[in-house]
Image (tube, rainbow, N blue to C red):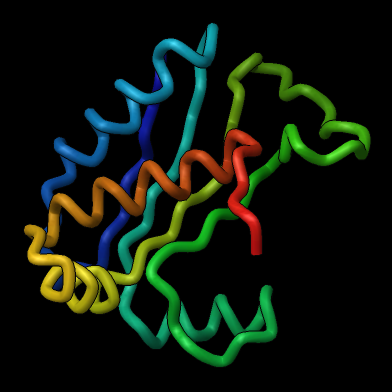
Length: 131
């Protein structure tokens, strides 16, 4: 069973079901057993704070991922939780950045949010792009 925990600031309209469905569809062939991932839709101020704190970049970005266990890293993994749920981590998406990028790419905002969520999910799975 795949659980997608979803949080959004109240004034950001997002098609939660569409995002959850896309994540479940992407994860289903890749994981076995109970799996959990979290998605948060935030404003630019919160995204700027996260970027400043964790990346030393004092500006908002469209998506950030915070993996609990990065398969690409060679370090020892965290100890498995006693409930046997694979918790991949958190995906944070800036709604204002998504609106801006969607208008530039002539996409619906929800389409772009799904794409950003899947991009963040790839990072949680250890699939990274060159910096």
